[in-house]
Image (cartoon, rainbow, N blue to C red):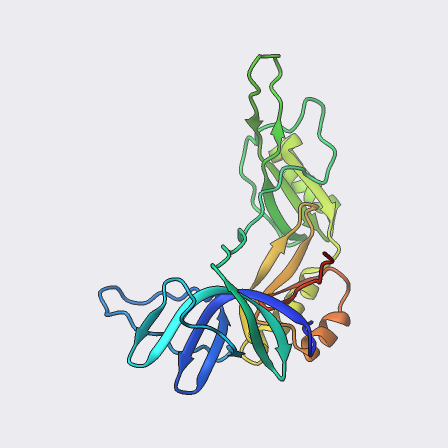
Length: 254
């Protein structure tokens, strides 16, 4: 959570309009093609930006007295606004989905095989995802060659039921782990966030999985408000991941 006086950093859009200067995180908004470019109105979750230099940005666009551009900004959070102290070129957003290569189950003899059949998932399953572990070739060769094998990793409230249903279809390509959460628990967290989408200025919300196969609810948002932090602290650790776009910047010596 960002507190008064914290040094913060974020990448997003700087906007100057008739109400002042603003900063908002990257928002993926599609607009009809063929229209003349304009400065898009500021999003309701934008924060005020003091000290932004609109003449020292790359790709500055101005129309009808409004100005916008994208930048990576660093500054101080004070009086509910971002006091910009440094501007740099925008930082590319991290990949939305990780590519995992290590299933949480021990590999069968000979390694993970290619699955031979698709499976129909059922109610005991909390979450499922395909992992593609890399494995070395069976025969020595002078040039490293890696084959790719798909493994279905399932987190289940009842692992035995899933094993009984899917092991005959998938054989050694199946990895089942006990789920830390029930489907109802995950749904309750997602519903709580969804009901506060505008109030908490959420950008994105959904179910994700870790490399250990465990599911969690991930929420991207502008910043973590005190009430959000208090709610998250009341939940079982690991069931929700808050990903704020305005984050504290750790001070480094030197």
